[in-house]
Image 1 (cartoon, rainbow, N blue to C red):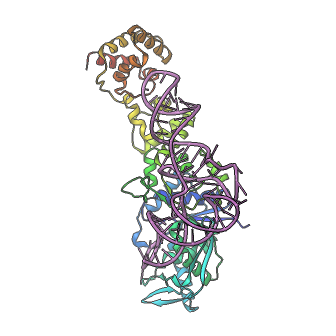
Image 2 (image 1 turned 60 degrees about the horizontal axis):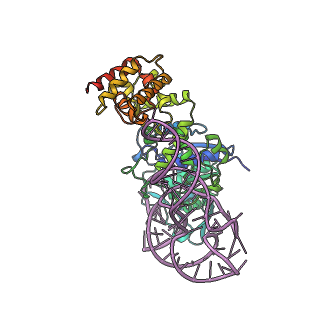
Image 3 (image 1 turned 120 degrees about the horizontal axis):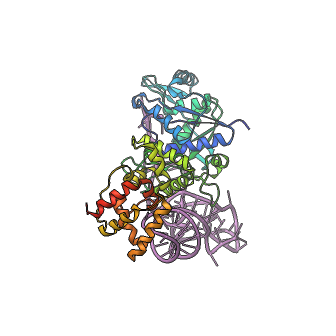
Length: 417
RNA sequence: GGCCCAUUCGUCUAGUGGCCUAGGACACCGCCCUCUCACGGCGGCGGCACGGGUUCGAAUCCCGUAUGGGCCUCCA
């Protein structure tokens, strides 16, 4: 078997769409899992729609997710001359003709064109239903439906793995390739991804750009794992798979034909699984990377210190700031029982050493003395110190906050301030 | 409208004629654990779109209907 070679072919018209990313991921998994090669080819045939920064953005997004490619980035426009030449050849051979300055491909008049799609099985079209499509515009620029198959041949692409919206283009591209006397690649049309409202993903209704997911604090390996499971499965029960496991296990045969819906709750859950499994140092590091990206400049040593307190609590990095804000900024202890706060202040003033175990011991003793359940007695303290009814572990939080700051906040709450 | 495609719990899916009384995961609900939240443990709810065939036997094969989607650009 020849070495598989695939390509990712985004058009530089904006930021990377999550659906496109999933398609690229399948390409990447296929290439990496089969000792193949994968190219990144920017489909910039339509210069009028090109967005200046898109090419850079696409590359950095892909890198962030953990998808790489072989060789330099290619541009479809670079092969325009070659495409024009082939178009002229087709005209000379009668496979194409001029029409108002453009060149149209002449479809076969009868018979059918079909292929065995690697994910959908056999698909067949009647040639008489295919229209003669423009392959070179009147201004001389070749069109996508012509350059794409031509480039695929030129680049030695063996497997064209792309979105199902290309199914209808495929018969024409096959006919063009046949007219050019070229070998056909294997086609694999992967299903679309819908939004969690069951409809087509819409920029208006949900996150669609890969960068949106990054900004929301998803961890790249978790997102990759999640995306891989949209339309593909390994077996009937395996969900959490590391990058190398996905690479080893992926196969086109197990890609399903029906469209999938993005389930953000499941993504959140999976992301939480990944975050909790991280080594503490790595967790803190990733957290800092996210904060960097968000331009939140809280002191990194404090961030590192707070990281272990939230690792089990949050499932996305964007939940971090609100969770630990009290470490970095003053709080407003609304509604904290003054009497309990004062008692706690007195009790904690004597704790030695100032560490979670002894703090816990003191506060449990305090609850006893107050004749309250710990859950009841601790709430005012939590409120006074963290400003919230929900917080990381109380004792660890107090330890990290320090005795002075803790006593100060309790005193303020005790005085109803 | 024409052509092509899809259809298993709310969601992602397992399932390729008998192993299916349809399995797992997320979500949801209940209980347990517990300093809040979360994690974790246990249990529960819930599905083969519909109608015809084929077959001893169908979620699995065929036909039709319905629903959803894609394409029908000198867009990609």
